Amino acid sequence: MERKEIARVLEEVGTLLELKGENPFKVRAYHQAARTVLQLERDLAELIETGGLDKVKGIGKALSEKIAELVTTGRLEYLDRLKKSLPPGIFELMRVQGLGPKKIKVLYEDLGITTLGELEYACLENRLTTLKGFGSKTQSNVLKGIENLKKYRGYFLWSEAEAPALELAEILRACPAIERVELAGDFRRLNEIVKKVVLAAVSEKPREVARFLKGFDLIESIEKQGESELSLALASGLNAQVRLVSEEAFPIVLYHLTGSEEHITLMSRRAESVQMKLSPDGLLDQSGQSRSVSDEVEIFTMLGLRWIYPELREGRGEIEAAEDGGLPELVSLSDIKGVFHVHSNYSDGGLSISESVAWCREHGYEYLGLTDHSRTAAYAGGLGLEELQSQFEDVDKIRAEYPDFKLFWGIESDILPDGSLDYPDDILARFDFVIASVHAAFKLSEREMTKRLIRAIQNPYTTMRLTCLPYSPRLLKSGPLLK
Image (tube, rainbow, N blue to C red; front, side, top):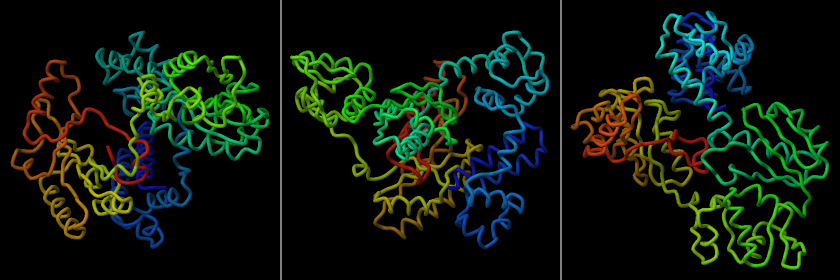
């Protein structure tokens, strides 16, 4: 288990302890241990083996034993016990914007609220306003948070869907009753948001497949079972659909399960224009005879088109481009020469600067843009002026050590409520580049927020403005924290 995941588990333990009303010092110890793990320079496994972990400031014997358990087994029994000691529905309350462990504890103890439905009902009955630390404004915000949660329930970022989707595909490939498996749908198109994991599989034994799947922790339940389809509920909250087909039908089914609705509709019209018919059942010629295809490439060839990458199948002009040779080449890993906006363990990153540089060099990158949090983001370890100087000295040493590698020194500067950047101009002028980012004061009016962003953009030291957290699924897997 990597340091970032270990830190996440320790943070979760701290949060659950706070929900249970444990000693605040114990709660803080877990949160502090999470930060310490991220900032460690030495290898965790080595520290555990040599018995040096419990000597690290902020760890101690009890925590070192739990960290060792995580490193060696990948699990923490203490966390499992904590989860079992609380009502399952209470964890969903943590997803409501504006509700932290302290407020949830009050809701649980004073009103007996353990589910999202109970919380919504209490808001509609105006019961939250009677609680200490709550008020009509808080109640209104909680209700709005519930509405947003319900609206987007079932939607996952590609990065969140990646691990369960790939694990499910591997489980299916291991099933003796399945000959072939491919991921399809939003996931295969690399959409930023995935609502369902869709897979096509070659099998004529749905019952055997269903029996095989029942023994895996990843799969919470089989919601529906038919002769050609299985609907699964995964432990992660994702739903999955597995379409079981013959080898002959596989290419057509994979194609139809991959493209967006708009793409499929336009491709059906394209087939009609050349006197053919394209449907989930197959590709028919003008005489009504089925045309067999060995792979997806042949589908496009028979319709007079170049192969269209799955990522482009959105119904946005890709069919016309495939006809006249205007399809773009997709960006590949070999095109990526370096990464910007990387956090180190100076703030909330999981690797030191030297480790990040080593990782980039190992993966063939030519440069790295370091941008830890600025001082206003104290919750994320934002850098004070002394820490900035220390970091600059580290950067200077690493530059001298690796003259063939470009290490750019930057900062993710908070955009303050008035639109100014964190740090005075003489400090900002020292950086190679500055990313301006909003992390707080989100409740300004539209007019005030617009003025704020415009002023930040007009600052001569602003190099990049962060409006969202871009994520490239095929780029970094376990390297520096890239935002």
